[in-house]
Figure 1 (cartoon, helix red, strand yellow):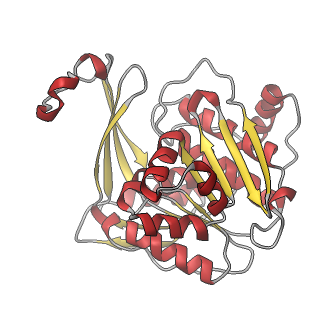
Figure 2 (cartoon, one colour):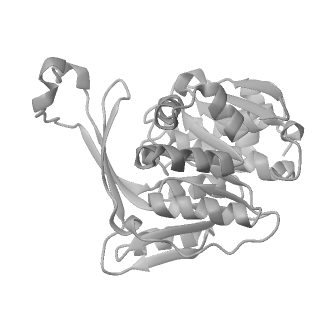
Length: 325
């Protein structure tokens, strides 16, 4: 089973603001917002949803194939992927532009303000080469490409995870309804779920009925995996991994998705041909939660590191059970 990751490759410029945004924004004057934040730290790191997911999967001893569009400044990132053994055959370089860049300011309460330059992400990556048994994830990238990939994977019976992220607001009601229906799993955070409901005009029950599997991340409260198949409903609450070292929430979501994918491929089950209820969802969710905490314990989205043996030992320590994969 190959793992196919589509999404953004980006350079992240991350800044830490030691205060609280709310102390500098007057709600009654929001129509004329003009604020400036003096930051304490500034770092340039490797990022982008596809890059982040691929990095954490490499730590989990998987070698995914990345499909993304990048610019003429990709060389540093390419060298990194080569060192990690990540397959970049699906990456297309556009020499007339730059690789996407994110500018992220985080305050002391972990609130974030992000400016994003799409650059090469405005274009398409190479078309995926697929085979029976592959698992794909469509993470945030060019919205039109995300829609095309959903149709492409569905037409070839390749199960895929729909991870709309910050691009969710780019979809129309009918587009979002369609992709949720085509996907095997829809994964969002609680805010993105609220946006999904608003855009689709679906309540949560209908979103779940359409998606089949809905995974909602809840920050410090963990995550919720909800399954609806053949009129049978199951909900699995996943607790967050305990930590006193949380530093930066930026890459937690992408690392969570890497842990989720690791659990899915390790199950050796197929989301199209097998019953959803055969999957070990508690273990899969806990693996995802653990992968996420490693990321948030470091600044940046790809600065965490662990061996797979260390991962399994920490799983045992936190959840009082052994990881079976």
